[in-house]
Length: 303
Image (cartoon, rainbow, N blue to C red; front, side):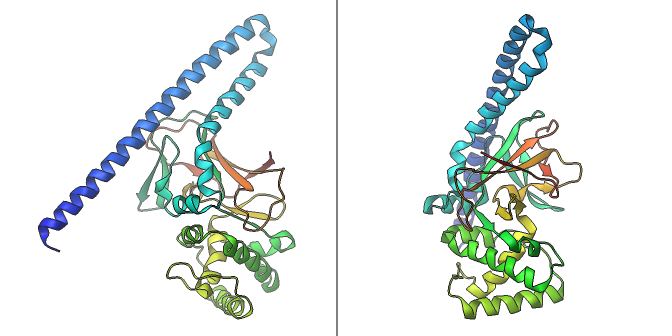
C-alpha cells in the first residue's frame, strides 16, 4: 500500500470516529436535558402534593424518584435486545462499542484497560446502565466450585456448567465472551484447567470452535471469563454482562449493581435474557468520570 492510500484510509477512519463521537455527545446532551426536565416536573409535582399533605413529602419524593428511574430504564429498553441471543443481537454484542446507552462512552485506561465513562453529569439515584446478560449459567449445587480455591470436584462441576452455557450461546456472542478479560491463574490451576478442557473435548462434542479459538481452548478460557466478569444473580446462577464487565472495580464505587431475575421464566443455562443487570448511581458522577462498582457487592431481585 502506497503512502497516499494509507493517508486516505486513516483520514476515513478519523472522520468515522469523529462522527461517532459527535453522535454520542449529542445523545448524551439530549438524555441529560430530558432528565433535567423530568426532574423539574417531578419536583413541581412533589411540591404541589406536599402543599396539601406536608407530612407525606418524603413519600412523594420517593415516588417521584421511582418515576424518574422508570423513565431512565425505558430509555435504555432498545438496548436490551442487543443481548437477547438472536443473530443480530449477538453481532452487536460482539463489539462492545457498537451499542452504548446515551451518556456513556468507552475509553482505554493505562491502569484499568477499557472502561465506561460518563459523557454527561449523572445525579445520585440515576440509572446509568441497564443490560440483559449475554449468558447466564445455572450452577445449582455446583455453585460452591465458582469460588477460587474450591475442591477440584466442585470446581470441575462449576466449569462444566459454564462451558455448557457458553456452548448454547450464538456464535458471535461466544466470540464476544472469549474476548473478555480472563482472570489470572496460578500454574497449578492452569494445569487443572488444561486437563479439564482436554477431558471435555474428548467426552463431549458440545464445545464448538469460535473463530480461530478451538473448542479445547474455549473450554479452558470460559471458566476464567466467568471468574473475572460474572456476577451472582442468586439461586446459584452466574450471569455474564457484556458492557457491565467494563465497569471498573472500586471499594468506594459510584454505582451499585443489581441483578434482576425475571420471575416469569425459569433460569436456564445459556438462556440469554433471563437476568438483567442494572447500575444505579449512589452519588453524583461528573462528566468524564469513570463508572465504578464494588465487585463484591450485588443486590438480587425479581421482576
